[in-house]
Image (cartoon, rainbow, N blue to C red; front, side, top):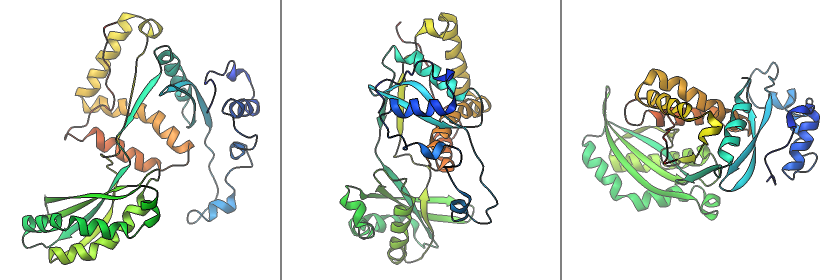
Length: 306
């Protein structure tokens, strides 16, 4: 964790020197970031074991966004992106927010959802009720699949059941809520869903088809807020214009698509730089932007009393 995320004159150094300065500021060992050095990252042989028909590897620039204070702690933010200005814009926004305490976050928890699709139920509403009655049994069966996750404080927490009208008829959809802790959770929830499917089919008196996680992670939300100084932004008119532009994005899906693309410039860059699943996060973000049936902005701006 850096002592201070404002590294004076970082841009005036060579890339090699910047890497050393960032490692020092973050209190890391000299070799902790060695994978970022050309020739020391992903090898062709390693890539050949990751996906099929490998012909090479593609490099993406990795930069470090500075000036961030997040929940009262200084942070240096790794960002992998090919687009100019993203790292600089993030660093500048963090600098402006810094004087008012930086960014403050809240987290709803680490619940991921697995879906089990029930087809051909003769009595869908009654099937829903029978599945809800079997809640404790199903949760116990799910937790039997991953005792390590349970030992670390995670595991299946609840179920929900919906009756869904589709073009292929009415379907019963069971949601299994699983606390996956720090993991992305796909393997854990998919394994549980696979194990539950035969018993769910038996209770339903029908058959199951899909049993897989959803990337609509509505029970795993992170929220952030910050105050940006009006004078540092450029004055009262700039503030009013930002609020007006934000309102445009909230009201209009055409503007919201581009507005959210700008937000994802930062989010995807961090997800990629930390070796996580960019597609899953992007899918979750955009589905959340349309959660009320209309695509809208992922952010909201307003003026405070000052």
